[in-house]
Amino acid sequence: MATKADFTEDEWELLREAPPGVGMIVIVSDRGGMMRESFSMAKAYAEARKQPGASQLLDELVEAKPDMDHTRYGSKEELVEASLERAEQALALVGQKGTPEDVEQLRAFLWSVAEHVANARKEGFMGLTGERVSDAEEAALERIKGTLGIA
Image (tube, rainbow, N blue to C red; front, top):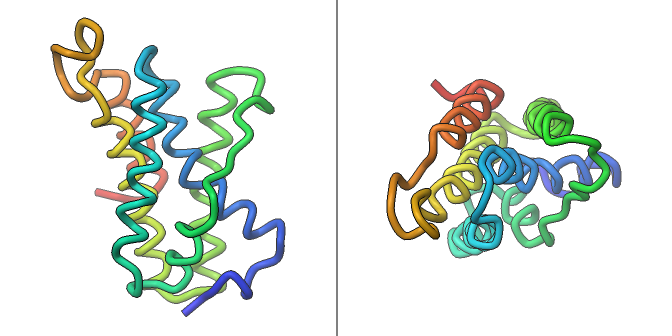
């Protein structure tokens, strides 16, 4: 079982950026709702903190403050591509240094963050009516699924 101590500072930064990165993919996929969607990302972390023990690595990851500097990207597309790449790299890195269970726990957490963000608000008038997940968010979720290797 991997722990934070198994990773270099740069590797840990990569792991810390992966969850908010997948959340940002969903946030930027459709306009509006950024505040609720950001809170829903925090809720995914809070829920994971309430279920400690399945993976020490995940426990340490969710205790760390979510961090991602989205301003370093020049466009929405650049942010999406970099975030997908970081998620893929994070899973590969945990696969090298951790157990298959660590990888599955990280994969499940990344997916949980994406789903929380997508379901943060209704997409209609002022977020009060309409579908829970927009077509653009659904497309973003499909890209995330592909990157995470979720059927």
